[in-house]
Amino acid sequence: MRTYPVRVNLTISVDDELLERARRLAQQRGVSLQELLRAYLRTLAGELSGAEAADELIALMGRQGGRSGGQRLSREDAYEDRL
Image 1 (cartoon, helix red, strand yellow):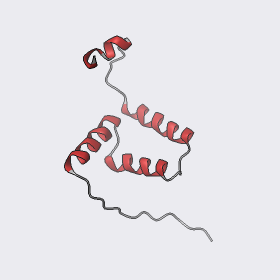
Image 2 (cartoon, helix red, strand yellow; image 1 turned 90 degrees about the vertical axis):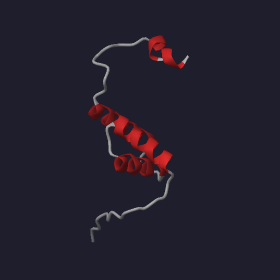
Image 3 (cartoon, rainbow, N blue to C red; image 1 turned 60 degrees about the vertical axis):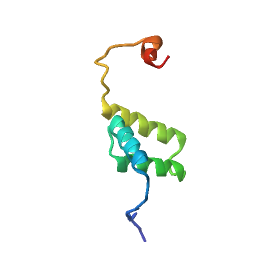
Image 4 (tube, rainbow, N blue to C red; image 1 turned 135 degrees about the horizontal axis):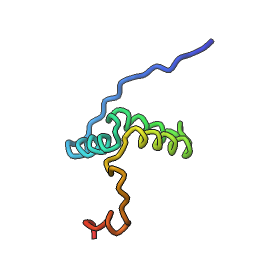
């Protein structure tokens, strides 16, 4: 007998600041908040190995594209405003 995964909805309560930070993080990564949370839960529950999580992150980064325009920065330039 073959079984199929069933998706269920999950409702959680978080404060507004945490929710907004999570939304910004998802937007920066080019994924939905739902995708971000699902990937985190899969990693947390041990469904993904470290290598699989890294592969998934690389795939997400590839879809994101970035905004550097091909410009290469030195370490000093990249962290200039943080020092």
